[in-house]
Length: 453
Picture (spheres, rainbow, N blue to C red):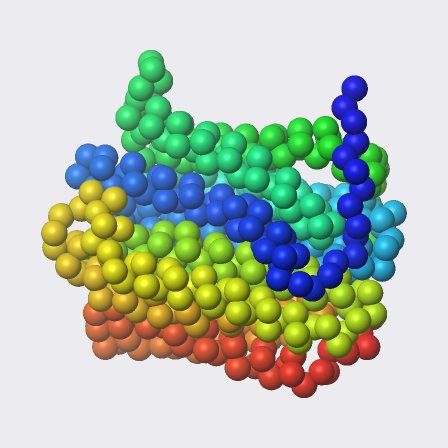
């Protein structure tokens, strides 16, 4: 019989050690979908003529839309769980989590049905190449089968981060990553007697990997006694009040994260008009941005949880000093990445197995993206701090403003003026600056103080 883990405190301090202890496991958890995309693309870059690397950009961003919607649900639930933890009300945490699972399953089923019914028509509006269209649709029809596993995994992140037990995220991350690498190799190339599925093999491998990550983290939570402590899955009956509370907090965030990635899909669809190399470069940059950005997003998720927790403790005066510490860590890490990547960009680009013209064309884009990462390092922390205050509607309004600015820039530069890929990626500068200014102003204004959720 397993022995329950010692019960950790649900109330947090705000020192550097606490920030790092929480953010490092979160960064590994956020890396999951990014590592899956990178692994898929590295294998596909070396498969056949590398043609599928461009297609993987379109399909990968589409799947990220649904992953981002789940991340929005995760963020809202995490803020609520963190607030209840700060208030020392563990009995409410399990009830919130159970209702989050019901909502997540509804979203997963909706995402699968919408993909199967609408993607062929939607993609045909932008893609004239019939082979490209057929490959993208076939891949996505398989890939969305992973949504239920992804959503349950994300909700367990909310539980563990919100209750100051983020160290347990590592096991699921490692299991999913190893499963994805193994089955990419086996199913793309057809090894050990398995069929060679090519591009679709990457989709099947990702679904298997997401199930593996979810299952492993379930075992960890069960063996550590966390499920018993919070009465997880003790009742999955619909609870109107908690359901409404979660949706009030999470719905703006789901729309926020969803439309954020929709705008990225818009970028990729327009970039497809510039040829396959432009798509390949943009896909490589998305992988790069997602991999290194995972650590910045971890600091942002930490800001969400810790701001909600200290407000729940009644210590609103701790919020701005806390954000200062988180931003110093986030910006410091991004500066290290900036220096490293700009020192050896060719080595990073070489992993995709493309020719010298690809590397030469991608070099200026690398410079642009590394500057965008510096802007993101503090912008996303402030935006998630707004979420942590319980004002998710304000977060959504800020995101909507930034996306409008981003899409306007992308349309003019990529579609109307037909400028280079590097100019197109400067849209990330526009986006992060547009997020930072209103989020910083809102936190500094103190308008969030005294609000009850």
